[in-house]
Amino acid sequence: MTTLSTHAISDPIDVARVRADFPLLAREVHGKPLVYFDNANTAQKPAAVIEAVDDFYRRTNANVARAMHALGEEATNAYESARDAIARLLGAPSRNEIVLVSGTTQAINLVAYSHAMPRLGPGDTILVTQMEHHANIVPWQLVCARTGATLKVAPITPRGELIVERFVELLTPDVKLAAVTHVSNVLGTINPVAELGRECRRRGIPLLVDGSQAAPHLRLDVRALNCDFYAITGHKLFGPTGTGALWAKREHLEAMPPFFGGGEMIREVRFEGTTFADPPHRFEAGTPNIAGFVGLAAAIRYVEALGIERIAARERELLAYATAALREVPGLRIFGEAQDKAAVIAFLIDGVHAHDLATLLDHEGVAVRSGHHCAHPLMQFYGVPATLRASLAFYNTHEEIDRFVAAIGRVRTLLG
Ligand code: PMP
Image 1 (cartoon, rainbow, N blue to C red):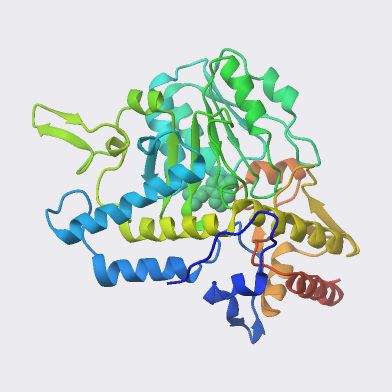
Image 2 (image 1 turned 90 degrees about the vertical axis):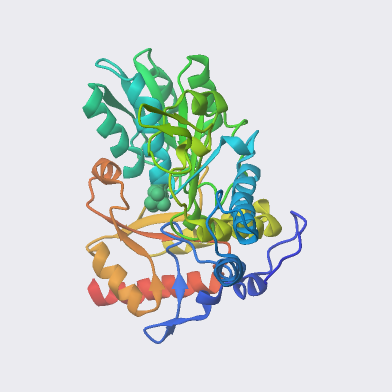
């Protein structure tokens, strides 16, 4: 199994060595070496993750939490190790505050239906921001439609930064919950969550943070972030799809009724009425994605061994290099120029349709995303239907950025 020794923070990442951990990065696309710049969409998986999943099915496979045999116990321990790994990653005070779910989308829906819906009524509001992913908009709209509550939207600047004073002004007594992304999946903006959390807490308003794009890139500590709920998704964190977690303060979880009913989440079932397990199992009905969580635990161990600060430093450097190179391209406009920004670059080129450019880049072996990035309201803010987006990970290289920018140059001449 692939292992990595722990490195000092100042020690830069050995990119050639790290790339060798990711088998997919070695493949070709359309006869060209792959340049994978769609990491914000889903990240590639190190061999350690692939092998952990493979090994689970080859050696351990059994259901969790119910089998009275060795395999069942091993499977349960392997699965539960993901809860420990996630608790470490998030700086959670207790592993029992970690609910294992299929991803951020399920985590936010769980909070929407189980925490928010019973508390909402006409006149109440939920505060979101202009830069949210649909996963942090639509669940709130659904519970608003059922309860008569409404959404309020905190504005951003054209550079793509949240206007913190406006956010704070909007924290009026009608707000029953605020829901904010930690890092924008389009703009790369890193929101000042600890500050927003302090303002929410002062007013007794719970804060949910969508950490999908933050967990792979930033050191996290949910206590220091002053939030109440923190949602992550495993597949952007170099783990398998269909894995993720909700961290919630214990007092919230204890007050939340179950969302899904079924096996594993009960204490006793009678036809006259059922009593429920304590959190987090109360929210984990049915057989989970066991192998997926075994893989996610391996992914978190991989990130820990590499060191999140070293990952962040490498990505900052790649972002600066790519941004400078793209700024040289005539007619190229970057969306999102926040002071504090992750390695995500959304852009358009005058007169060139985003999808055309993405298709031609694909033929050059360069994978970028083109579209609305599940952020229609953000596209509406900028008055564009779509953008391209290059999102980098620590395993990307300067040479790949050079190839990407050169390919844009060629394609621009072709389409311009
Ligand atoms: N929020 C943000 C900011 C995202 O980038 C994504 C994934 N694109 C999600 C939520 C949803 O994550 P998932 O589909 O894995 O649940």
